[in-house]
Length: 416
Image (cartoon, rainbow, N blue to C red; front, side, top):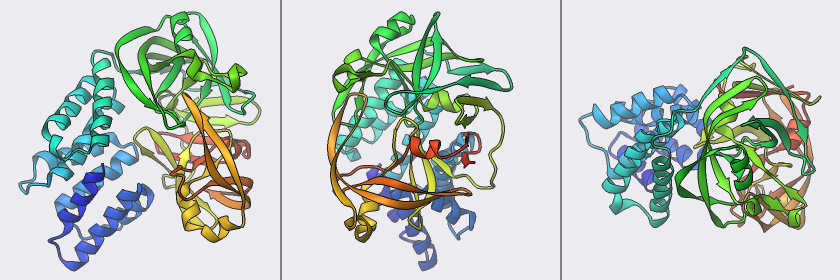
């Protein structure tokens, strides 16, 4: 993506001073991944050329999961406008279309887009970006003949959940008559299962492997499998794609703690609006969360939650698979004076595939606001400015609320 951002400045360079400043500010928002401020800016209907307006609009629609609108605007830019775009901008739109196809479970179409990217834009892809596209292609190729994931459900479905020894939510999942408690993880881009459980549940193994970046900084090879059916209460999912890791990759603390399966964003979001109650109940329906504006966006498959922390409007990964929230390196950089008052700590962060140590500051009584709810982190870690660590909202925020409502259709989360 990095090459695309330079193109944004090129696109806007020849406009009037007012338009150039507007385009430059939009470029900076996209570069930071701040789609909430981008949404605010575009709602103000800035004076942009048609090409620029459609271009930024496609990015905004993609971020807020309005895939039909994103596709329409991207196709207009790619096919209907006479004025040519720089290759780096065309690359970004091709990447958007490839991601869009995957989210619609149109795997063969995603394969075609990724093939086109590698062939057409080889000269401007960095080695790192090329490796990412090749990995996306490997995933799409493996799934090319897999049917789209779908769900059948009653109007309202309820299940019970439990917390495990790591403080993570576990939900009952059944396939082929075998039941297991899976981690409920909004931060997981794909659902994941151990090799042994995939065999017991009779998952269909697919050809090919993909690289998975772990929180330890390492890359592990993962196989792929399809669950013909997956049952969670009265929710029946079909053609669910799983990453398959070795049992050892999902064992921690010398085997004292292990995970057999992880239910990721593609399944969780398709289940409908999620209500998480602190009495151990979870409900799925089509209710609409209160509020008029989205406070959830997507960076790929990763949900980003808008909130206010220490009087600053920001966005963090919403990761129900994290026991405690953590502030990222960018927060520490912008709030150096506040973090200087914290106690320095060496902490270990981890997940599937391993863990790693990083430097952090322990902060006290940091206020936060999400929607209409205001509270404070009694204690929270902020990663060292040089740690290159993203911040995330975890189970501590969920547990601080009587009810959490996650409305995936309207991309809004409400805490009560």
